[in-house]
Structures are given as C-alpha cells and as structure tokens.
Image (cartoon, rainbow, N blue to C red; front, side, top):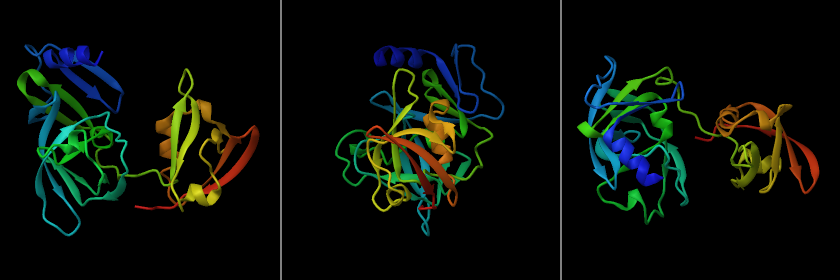
Length: 239
C-alpha cells in the first residue's frame, strides 16, 4: 500500500487542505497553483520531500536547516518538548512553535546528517499543502489557523484510540509530576467521559484540544479495574 501511495503521489499533484480535511488529486500537465500559494523547491530523501527552512532558538539568530516533511511523524524515542523562537518556510514565519527533541535518536530520518528537523502535522495543518512531485516543489497556502498560537497537551496524559471505530480511549502514559499524575490518573485507565460528555462522541484531536486549555479544571470519568471513577484534572501551562 505504501509503495502504491508513493507511485500515485509521484505522478500526480496532491493537495491537502487540513482546514477542510480534504485531499484533491490533479493532473500535473494542467495544474495551476492558486494565487495565494507560494512554491518552495524540494529535494527527496527516501521518497520523503525535503525543503529549506530557517530555525531560530530563543535569543539566537536564525540558522539554515533542511527539513523533512512527514505528516505522519510521531517518533517512538524519548522526547523533550519546548518552544523555539521561530520557524520560517519561504516568506512564512511561524512564531514560537512547539518542537520536540530526541536526544537518543539513532535511526530514522534524524539519523541522517542531511536532515536538521522533521516538519509534522502541527506545522502543516496551518496551510493547504500541495505536493507537486513532478515539478519538484511544494506549495504552501496559509489557512485560518496560520496565526493561532501553538498549544500543547497540558495534562501529561498519553492516550491510545482503540476499538473498531477508534473511539475507545485508553491511557498508555502518565508523565511524572504532571497534572494527570497529581490527579491520580493511571496507565490502563479507560476514559469514558469528559465534563459529562461521553468520550465516544469525541476523537483524539478533539480530546487533545480540550487538554490544551491551561488553567482550566476538567472532570474526567474513567473505568479502572471494573470501577467507575471521577477525577478532577487541573491543567497548567508547562511549556
């Protein structure tokens, strides 16, 4: 399936509208970019597009970096999250984005000396992204989320979506000394409701948005060893 997807995207122009959650396929011979879109040249590493960016750490001047574009990047090594001062892609400057750092990275894209960073969904969702592989370019068009502040899950909870419809949410990680840890959340807890709303009516993205509300107190209902518990979780800004 992955091989087939690579063939398709290499021969067509593929536009991903993150705001509308739509994907469009176009013929590269007739494709005309939108007036608001900016084309950035790309190269390829293991069939993954790589583009040039400028990254600035707090108090330092921007540095050039080659960035792999991978909307599915989620990493499995130990990671530390923090904010960088800015990320610039062509004319677009994103202020104080969240970055994760993997000091133990020994494999994957970051093992290559040619790659300085991976751009994932948190960056891409602020654009309509068009992958024009036949012309070795990627087009970016800012959407309504472009200027929104970058937020992060403030709970310390890591959740897995399970079940046939992926609406069964199980806690698979609790960060030590985080709000979730202080509140008494445990690995293996099954989240059944948030502020009285059944968790099955939500998806991981919506739950993550709820858990980004630093300073708010939310009520969680969980199932633990057959017992139903109510837990009060006070979120605090941690980054």
